[in-house]
Amino acid sequence: MQGSEREGISLAELLAAFSLAIDLGLGQPMEHVLRSWRIAARLGERIDLADEERASIYYIAVLAWVGCVADTPEVAKWFGDDIMFRADSYEVELAGLPGLAFMLTHAGVGGPGLHRFRLGATLLATGGKGIERGLLSHCLTTSRMAERLGMGPQVCGPLQQFFTRWDGKGVPGGVGREDIASSMRLFHLADVVEVIHRTTVSMRRSKSPAPAAAATSTPPSLTPSAPPRPMCSTPVRMSRIGTT
Image: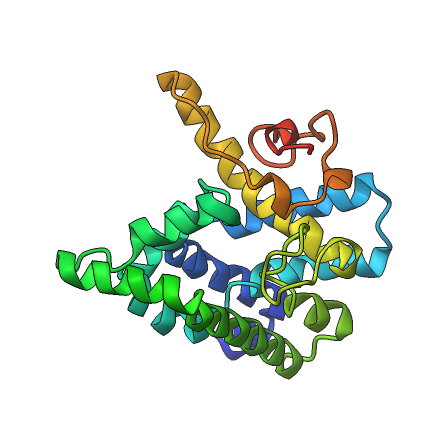
């Protein structure tokens, strides 16, 4: 490659290429992150999101999972296969009893039974504080990387809210509803919708039930009653997300 060609690569293009590796780390097909961005961006258009916020969605999407390098040791310590853990997490509600059951069934995957039992017991006794610290480190790492790349507060701020939830039961705890930046709320929704839509298409062919959507992790106000115009190869059926 000639020097002029290297200089012609933009930061947006570089991060798009990097996002393909992130897809694999999430246990998802390549371009999951980019498809999620397209969904979130189209939703931003539908709700008349300000231009600056809508433009920030791209960098939020491609950078949000970069912090995995910070939380992967903690995730692997508790759940063994971190890629399988992240892939399976799209299929369940991660708050309350369903979330607890998910954590316990994945504790120490691949290890002997006694080791798994000890991890599960410790997880219950500590309330998952170690995992929470890992998620906070994830957000801090991602936000600082965005700062070093020259991103402004419209990107760096929302990245610190990546593991928040609409119901306030995410990380950090108590941050929810309108406290979460609109751009991050849109990406939360799109990240789940992309997986549910893609897997639902396959399940329809096999007539299996669709995976449970994290209805309380995304705001009902951002859930349109009809799908947006096609933005990928097939239209996204937004109604798969709950409206409670």
